[in-house]
Length: 151
Image 1 (tube, helix red, strand yellow):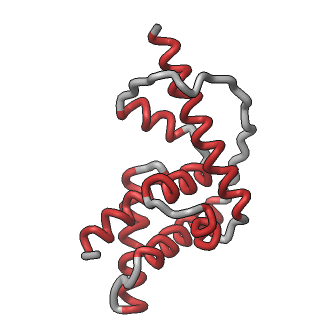
Image 2 (cartoon, helix red, strand yellow):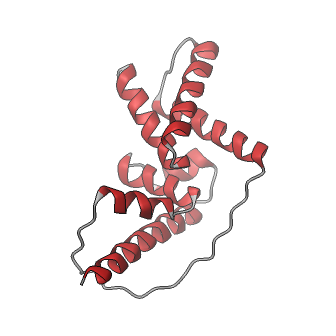
Image 3 (tube, one colour):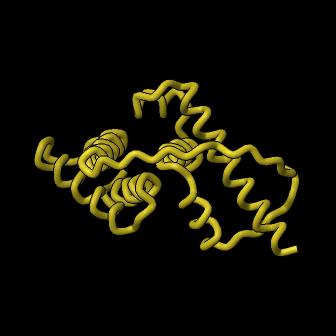
């Protein structure tokens, strides 16, 4: 994987964590420079992701941000056809908790298994599966709700 692909992948991962374009750029840049200073380059995508995640966690600890959001139970038809604009999708992703966005991104976009995500984030596998399930359920519920409003 060349440097440009590695940077793009790192940016997408950072964006999935913070859901802010400028913060994502900052995380990738900081991680890139940190790895170049320490190792002389970025060896693997996993190391880049781990560094970005650690930088994000450090910032959250510094800012003392703790967000708790109760899970709402909603009934929806999983066979309904939905059309959504990119703005709709961004708004829905913005409603997910950071842990849910991260797990969903690593699973759906990067193709990691729940066990690999568990190992990478030091989170129990069952929790990873739960985060992915909740994120998908929230996204599907939000899309269905938006679809119902159009009708």
